[in-house]
Amino acid sequence: SPIDFDNQVYTAVRDTLKKLGLDKDNFDTRHWNPFGCFINPGDTVVIKPNLVVDSCYLSKAEFQSAVTHGSVIRPIIDYTFIALKGKGKIIIADGPIDLTNFNDTTINNGLYQTVHYLKEKNSVPIELIDLREERLKKISSITLGRFELGVWILEKLSGDPLGYTTVDLKEDSEFEEI
Image 1 (cartoon, one colour):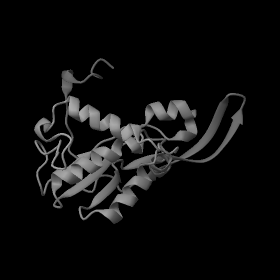
Image 2: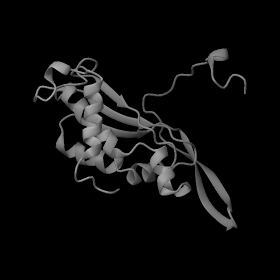
Image 3: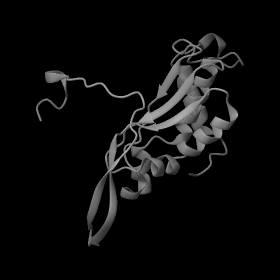
Image 4: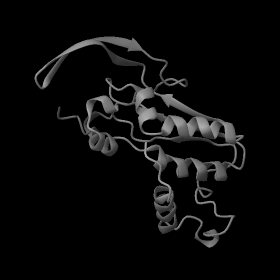
């Protein structure tokens, strides 16, 4: 991941929070707490980025447009730390498509490094969780022209440590017609 020495991404996220009017009375002061209106000290906060697919199936530009970069998540985490005031927990979680290697994706988008750096610097616990119970893991493949034929196995994963609840949306589901 390239380093943004001007920190333009952080500034863009910060400006977006300002434009949303979050804690506008304290903006540009050390007391600014943009998430304080909906995050309380002691809360468990789940941040759900977009970690759709890992980079080995996409070009660099396609990967960057399909996966939220860690530099975008970093200010969200920082402002969550401020709102928690040293009490609570942060979980960054997603359930990408079955073929995705979660660790590779979070390393390639900088999120893995960001979380592990922040674990050392903050008193609030922070976790990075793959919510899937299983994924497809390629064990061999052969490329024929533009096509790849592969052998895959179903690998069991830990999944959500809190478990799952089934919700049947019935006709309200966008997939109901399918």
